[in-house]
Length: 135
Image (cartoon, rainbow, N blue to C red; front, side):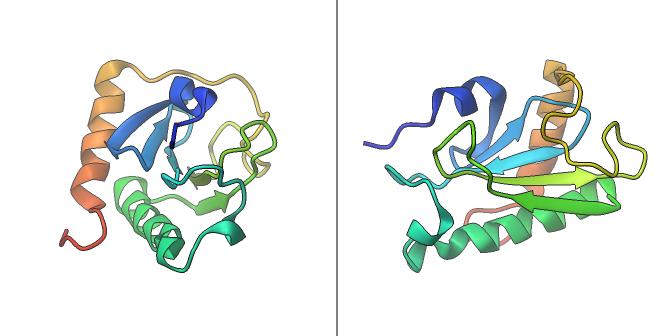
């Protein structure tokens, strides 16, 4: 049975469904896509049907472009600390705390206020719709 990894559950907020999550670090608009598949650790393990992860990451990237006009959008699947397959989509700006280096291991997370997290999640929900629906 599918279960979200405990670290992902602790460090993120649900956005509109279990698959799309907001990382609790307000230094960067940072979303995580988690395929709801049991025992998945690598992208190549996804079936062709599950390749919607790629399309969903494109939708999240386009939404981030609208929301915050970043200088760059970083997309990665690391899994060194959390083996469950998950896909990071991070909006980066030249003036962010870690530019031009990677966000991983850079400084301390700054947690969202409930109000700020809700605003960002609501904006993302307006722009990203589950597959098969119209925005």
